Each structure stands twice: as C-alpha cells, then as structure tokens.
Length: 484
Image (cartoon, rainbow, N blue to C red; front, side, top):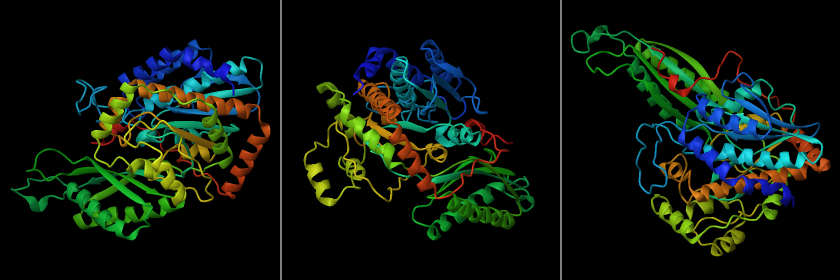
C-alpha cells in the first residue's frame, strides 16, 4: 500500500474537514454554487494545482490539474445543495437554520472535498517524478441540473483514461449498480384570465390544464415498464387569487427509465398528454427541455481495483460517543433498522446474506465493507446520476462510505444535520484514501487500465452517446417557475 502518499490526507485533516464545513455553511443549489467554487479553488490553487475556471461552458464548473503525460485519470467532485432542506447541524430533531433555505441533504459538501483529499495524495505521488496526470473535476448541479452532462457535451471526459468518484452513504461498498437515464422538461401552459365569479365563461385556466396533465400522467404510470418513473412539481400555479382564472401555469417533469431510448419514448407519451389537456381546456402548451442524463455504464475491472483498495486501507476508528450518536440518529428514522443493509447486500446469495447479517450489529454505525460479488447483469438503482454521462465517455467507477447513521435516508434533514460531524469527516477522508490508493495502483498498472478500456468498449457495443442538445443551457433551479 502507498501509505507514505496517503498520510498527507491525515496531515491535512483539519484543513479538509474545515473545507467541507465551509461548503456546508454555503448551501448553494444547481449552477448557483459561486461561493462553494471560490472556496474550493482557493484551496486547490494554494496546494499547487493548475486551475481552469469556468470550464466546459458551465459557469460554476472548474478543473484542477497536476502532472504530465499518460495515463490521465479524473476525479469527480460535487458541491451543490438541495433546495428547502435547511437544518441545524448536530441536531437530533428537525429545525431550520435561520436565514438559510437550502441544505446539504446528499452530502455533497463531503463528496467534493473527499475527491480533493484523493487528489492531494495522488499529487504527492506524482511529485516523486512518476508519469501520469490527475484532473479533479469540479462538477456543479448534480441535483436536478446534470452538470456533468453539460460538461460531457463539450467533451470534458473524452481524453481521460478513466474516472473515479465516490458518494456519501450509510455503508462502505463498491458501487456496481447501473442507474436510470432521465430527462427534465418544463411544460408551460397559457390561457385566458377572467373573473372567476363574474365571467368564468370567458376564462381558460392554465392551472386546470396543469392539474389535468398531472392526472393524465398518473394514469399513464399504469402502462409503463416497472423500472420507469415519472415525477412532477408545479413550479408556477399562476397566482394567489382564487377569484381569478389563472392564465399561466408551469409544471416541471422528471422522466426516468433504464435506457436513454426508453426515456425518449416515454417523453413522447407525456408530450401527448400535455397536448391533449391543452386541447381539452382550450389553452396552449409549449415545453422546454431543462436537462437530461444517461444511464451509468459499470466497469468490473475498475470495481475490482476499488475493492482491492478497500481491503488495504484501514477502516476509520469510531469512538463510543460517535456510535451512540449514530444510534440516536437511527431512532429518528421511520424505516426498520435492517432495511437499508438488507437492500445493499441483496445481490449476494441467500446463505451469504444470512451469515453476514448475523455477524453484524445493525443498530450501530456500519464500520465494515459490504461484500462484493461480481454480477454479469448489474443491479439497477432507483435513482439517476450524471456520473452516467461520464461513463459514456471513459471507463468509470465509484464507491460509497458510511458518512451518516443507518436509515438516515436520502435527501433528509438527518443527513444535513450529520454533515459536519466527526463521523462524516472520518468517512470523507476514508473515501479519499481509498480513491487515492486505487489511482496510484492504476498509475503503476497499465495492463489493468488496458483491461478496463477493453471492458468499456465491449459494454458500449457500438452504442453512441446522446448528449444534451447544444441549444439547452444550464439553468439555476431558482429560475424555474419565473417565466412570467
């Protein structure tokens, strides 16, 4: 193991922890992460990286590079927050931070800095004169914006030999799941305003059209494949006066399916419902594609390399007080204590499941690595990630580490609350070490990189990446619903 190079992560632990806390303190949503970007760039410049900002046509995207020559390996970092998830730190009940509306309910304050930790260790290795280049990608707008998809459209990842990333979670594991492709579309209905009591016959309600569209799509769910998903949010209801027929309304749709082609087919069906409801209400409808992302292409060769590093990098040591705090957070959740762990290890056979579960205390912090079993058909996760777009341009793989208590859920106040805790900091640095160990191993193992590329080509099977159309630009989510 490359312990000498990994030591820098612990040597700079306070700086890294403080960095992630600063991002937590500035929860900025998709494509509005100006303060977060400044904080991260200032640190990377101080550490001697060559920074490019903005990057690939996205204002809050950047790159930080070190080294020369091949191979070229990318580390993916994120730093965007979620809207309306404000929550006090280290608090065992739901309570907003005064003056803040957003919160890091997916741990991206940790994700971005964990990737920087890995970059620091790899840089130290490259300083010894070894060939190779490391590029840290500052990727904005993962939540609802698909920032990496906009970057991929400009070819951001085409010259990489491979890319690695991680994500905060409840368990330590190598991710081998594929993800759902998706497309996000804003439907805008226009009608005619009128006095709702005095002359309702002259009004044509855009809000009626929005609501009927949602009803129609709810019925559509009965006739789509099991893995597909349709979600919506009314982002503009047309006003606050019930005695006025609303002449304008907007509804934002997120459509998901395992393959990009399936998403496109489902989009056509949703469009027909929108057109039908506009016809029924005598309103007009137009739609605007906001973003899309592709399904994730797994890579077993890189997954095996990450597993190797999990087996070599020591697990963080958690104190009695930290474990007790984790139990308290678990008790605030509504799900049963076994649910999450059973889901994560369901890919193993039944006998292994039983033996593994019996060996673990499931009301404690998950300080072990989930056993990995190679699957020819990757499991399908319920969500989507713009890491999928990276995986269409180069071999890509990811890990998760236990940054929050069991059953904290996803996009929850519990995750926000734990985001500045010592357990989260330890797991963040642990992720950085595992990624760095893997990258240094790959830098010295050209045959493994060659195998990863061969697997990538085999998995693509001649399929062609479908990027976001050029005319679509990244939009801060706060702008949605403000067209009129």
